Image (tube, rainbow, N blue to C red; front, side, top):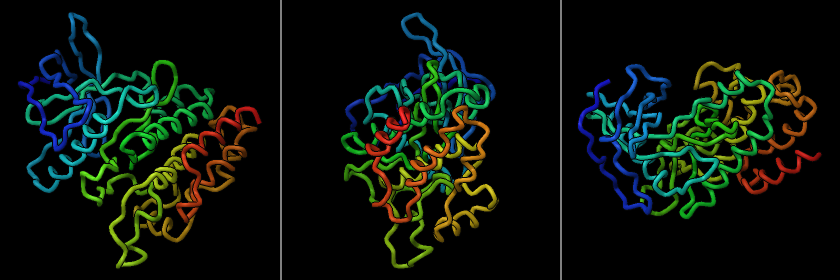
Length: 309
């Protein structure tokens, strides 16, 4: 893939950790994507800094002739850049090195994670501790929620969780993130996976007079439970319902994304005797009343205690 001259993407705010434009330092980008998402494609690239070449991931956001689609993509890019610029280096958050423009497409330049996403990693390493990976995810979410201002991920799922060279989980993809800083609209773009979304994010199906939904710490907790359950069972939430419309109706009608049998029959977890403990913890994430779900701090304590139970 040829690289056009880079130029700094526009920003709507002035964060404290402004991402640098690294377009001029990108030496090569693969012709074909390594991974694809709803709004972007991830390519392997080579970054040259201080006479040292480093393998990187180049996340290129799609641009089309459809203005409405472009507006959605631009919003995802803006949210992701804004979130990363508000965060400091953390062992449980994917490292973003800078930004670039490839042709007419905005891009993020990120650290390359050879192990890929967490589902791929577990497929190749079936005997690793799911419990430790779950704790990593919880601690990454805790960092987001305790940030000043707080950041709600908005789309926590296995494909948005990578694994580093030390076998530890890191969160990525903040295109659906909501930042509680009072500078953006109170209505967040609800474009995350509906299979992992909390029931309160679908209020118009229950009450036409309900205000537009806003992601919160508690809606992230619902998604957290779904992510951990999917790692344990290797099954998507609401796996027996192929259509999104069926999934949404199940969510608002109080049907849980998993049941206890899914956990106890799981074949992918090496600590089989710990499945029931994890079910007791994760099951609390799916309380219909958000205030009854455990806060991320409490969830972290429960997971840590389960190591010695």
